[in-house]
Length: 407
Image (cartoon, helix red, strand yellow):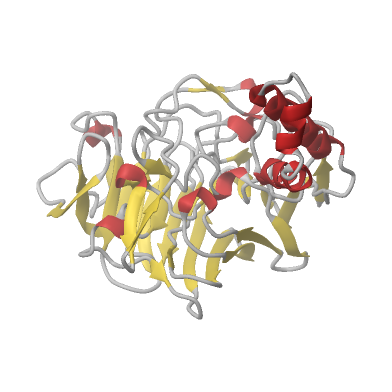
């Protein structure tokens, strides 16, 4: 199933940004238009000043208006559609949009056969444009926080867009979750899948080099959802750390909190952070702490000992594709296993999702969902002792996730 959405957004340009009628978005096309106007007028600029009573600032304002008109009226700018795409196998279905390669819904039965949507999200697509929850989004170029919004690679200092105080979060203010992806393939059948693509240009949000990025969502078995993320640098070495940011509530997105869920995380260590949630570089044992979920524990039995709930990056035991975590909801009988090939997993209990209006007008309160997101270690670009996230041209970054649901 495929649904194309245009009217709710206004026009959609080929730069990957949705242009909302009542929202001003600064984008590359404005720079291009200004450059075009500048090339036409550069030689005449001083002549205009000499022959006119206009001040320099008035002329600049006039030229800016011309650039704006060229930008807004050009019919040559290719357009992209934003759509909703469904993968379905029996009574298990997943809906995805190419805005941010975002998972909009995951519907599956409970132990009594009742269907429910088990991921948090907004009603309609418009709130995803300016939302700050990252509901269901594909996050990059580098997920997590980068200290001081800067790093040094091969002797060159790169300054990123700081969108959380002085730090960069989830790729900057317009990372991969805030752009339009291209649908490369959409295949139905026994194991339906959709493959999306995004071209990230050199210096986008400050990151070096051109990068081809792919994500494939696939129903790979009965009540199994696989997610494959790949990235291929084209011109320069660059850090890559992609993350799928769905918020899960196995009781159903409108069922209340996840505090009664039982969680098991196969990790003996975690990464310590400072008061800005920036890693200190220290890796500590979870033993004798409320962060120890090596054996199944109910979240509410431990969360009271953790300020603002869990927002913790665990160092997953083992290597390669292995079981990372298990979440169980006793009310519905639903359970979810996460398998992944990354060194870390972020466990977040949605403390900062509070009074957010979601699907069907439901108001999500704190702890309305949880994220269990495999990834590399946060701020690895500034901690050489962490596993490297630098990918060079000719190399391929690959991040595999598999969610296995039961009831």
